[in-house]
Picture (cartoon, rainbow, N blue to C red):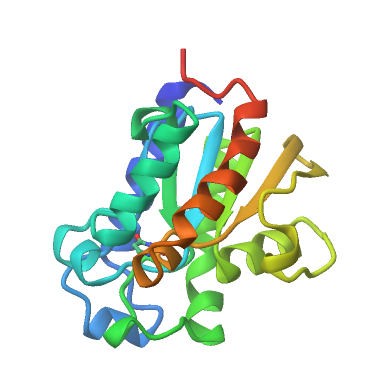
Length: 198
Ligand code: URA
């Protein structure tokens, strides 16, 4: 797919997400948070769900977890311009509770379109929810993130081979500052690939 076609698909999806009423989260959201970044990125990161700041601004990872995420990206010489960044859920769950299975089921059609359209070589899954969904989607056996963070899993998909790299959710380091070293260590897995957008 050409970059222009990718951009059009992602722009159309953004419009559809903005009008989405497939689950009850539309009743409490201020804004949808569809995702952003380069539609031609070689790496996509998938988080869990928007928090308060993301809901207010309509952008992913703009709160404290976003500050941690930017540090992690910088530790492997990447910037947000090099990546595509989105979440499993496009609307904020009230009080930042965990996503419900029914909300995930209602929402992942959009994520599937994002994965298919951007068609990255590498997918970084941030935390348990993204890891579970992506592992199941690509028929990998379920894992505990604590046992596989920073490891590289290779899968063959109908859109070509991909590498999946699960890492802890950046919010972990906002609850426990000592976790940042471990997160940075796991993130070094991304250095192995040449992921800068040219
Ligand atoms: N946590 C997430 O998983 N996604 C965001 O966009 C912000 C915080």
